[in-house]
Image (cartoon, rainbow, N blue to C red; front, side, top):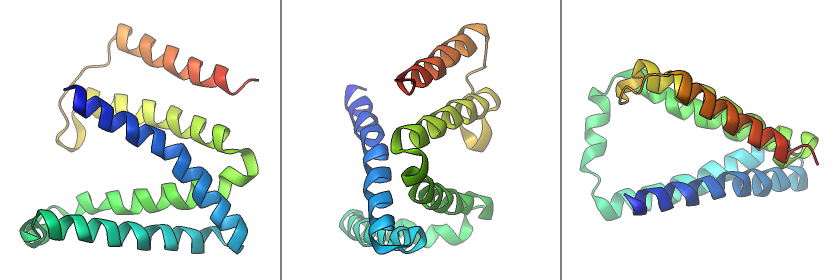
Length: 144
């Protein structure tokens, strides 16, 4: 279990780094959309290499997957495009703060209703309080 926590911690560390790097690229080349295209091209190359290394057979099953599951690609494009455009305007910290609040809200709803096959974890007063404390803590970090 600890290794999963460390992987997710690293992913969390990577999100603001991604935002800062891609926002800087967007400013440097004068186009957030072009910067996002470069990011996705690099990501595509890396993920293709991983799939080739781990075995491409599961890709054949994508045609049988429910099409709404492909919405994840639209959502990641929306995230990258929006953070690349907005982070230089309001700052990486503020942009990531708003993303984190959105993540807390949507994660609670997904867990509460078991959406998309997620394990059900009802939103009770204790969880809602914890999420509120987390959101408040993130807000406090942006008030300096």
